[in-house]
Image (tube, rainbow, N blue to C red):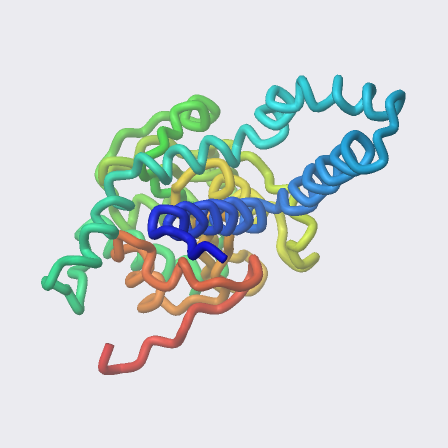
Length: 275
């Protein structure tokens, strides 16, 4: 029996890595059921056309498969967009290069505007004031900026608190921050239809999860009912965060413990005092 060559081993490894990446992407976006359905259809088509050789049914399925590429693009347009952005992300390649680098930064200094965001979220949480703050990353959020009121101001704790103060004109909706400035307020975000979202989470959490499924933005939610802080990123929400945990997750370029596998809603690892 011939032993597989090194090139064949690399080929198998890359295919396995690609399939795992697609699976993770589908699971995080809530499209895993559609993905399984597509795989089931492909398996059925293979059995009918090549195993049992049913000409009539096989011919019908062949016609469906022939336009399958277009159907897949329509079904998974958001997931494909996220995949391509992740593939071309400069930060993603920096993280890859960092694996072979001897330089490791144990601590990441908080950026000034992030300190203002964290402080505002802490104050809003203490007063049980609801808030939804989105921090733009590589994917442009211009289409969502157009739904709100343009501001273009420096990020400050007091300004964020005033925006979300109850019964003010701009409190209902999301604040979008980009390039370390508040770009707009009262923005409308896409609402996630993920069926795994617990019933106790409302529209703010669903909107935060929705924007994290169609972009690489980080969305912070302050619950009006409980005063808890949550952060949505790449199709997951990390709930019940302390201000220290939020600060770390916003500052680390790779999202800190955001790559931890698990369900949509879960807690990140605890930060100890020495951290």
